Amino acid sequence: MSSALNRKFIFLFAAIVAGGLLFSFFRPTTPQAAPAVRFQLLDGRVMEMAELRGKPVLVVFWATTCHSCLKEIPHFSKLYQELSPQGLEIIAVAMPYDRPDHVLAMQQTMKIPYPIAIDIQGEVVRAFGNVPVTPNTFVIDPAGFIVKHHIGLWDMPLLSGLLKSMLI
Image (tube, rainbow, N blue to C red; front, side, top):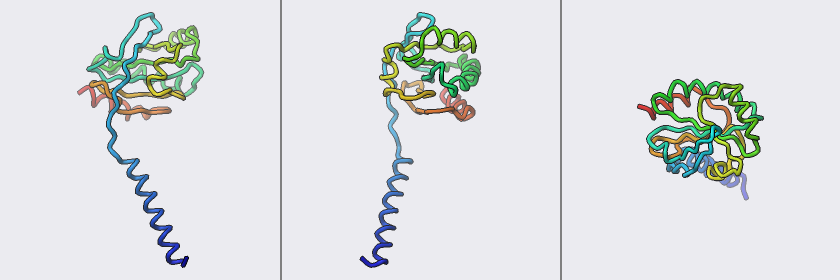
């Protein structure tokens, strides 16, 4: 194979790979309906995803041993206090390996104002695609569709803007 032909082949291959990457990054995605789950709350109440229709919802998977999760709690608390009167709901789902007494202690220590769900059997974790790591957050629009899935710490101004746009 000549070197000119080799270069053309390499260029063509690189263009195909780059085009595929650009398509996968920019392709339109169809929002997926949030799973119809029941949240067993730390205070004993049960909340169903269907009850939250009409509100933007954050479902936050977290753990008491996750330093990033603990770092986000004050930000989520502030967001909840600011936007819950307008309809925002936040449900924090403790991972199945978290002991309920540890979750309760963390709720009290950090004065978490939003509902916390205990997921001992891992049903909610499985319903949301076998959530592997924390923090792991799903943004659900008022129509009940997952519009954003985020792993790791949030850019809080970006999240706040997204949620506010759903409240208008």
